[in-house]
Figure 1: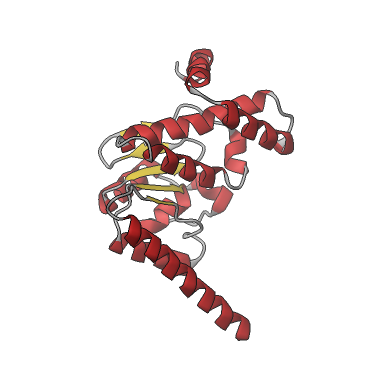
Figure 2: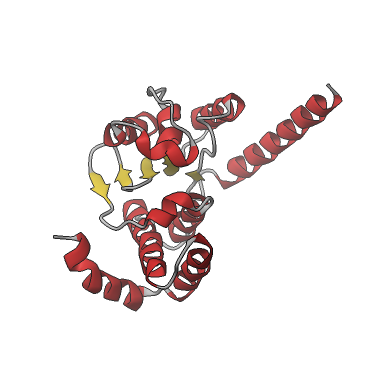
Length: 209
């Protein structure tokens, strides 16, 4: 019981901090919501819904099970199993329309939508779906891109493709998840406009036929 009490107080403190930051940022800064584990932890889902009711988020980035939970879609998959969620495009569109946000649903095929237009990322690397934290990193990169552009749609697409490109390139120089993680960070650190365009040219036959 004492542990539960301390845990609840800590969660309340964290919630207060998050709300304080959001109030200070709104409406001057774009907001990105990453609803981590809301499909598995009811208290997280309740908190995410309260934030979505009280604040407008320009972007919501989550895996299929997390986005499904936000719109009460039928779903029994969690975490790495999120790729098994059916009707992912429809779920992403529903979420985007409900919260008036651009939704970036990541998985085996990344889906980006504003509720009307849908972009499906043609590039994929299996390791990205296995490496815990890849989605969190993408959320941060999207937020960084939103700091230098007012075009939220383009920021989401470029950030998502950039992370995928780094994952695909890392595959070429790795033999397993451990070496892939090192190569993934290396590829992200050296990725620039020239490298991304070269990746497009090299990958066109494999992915864009």
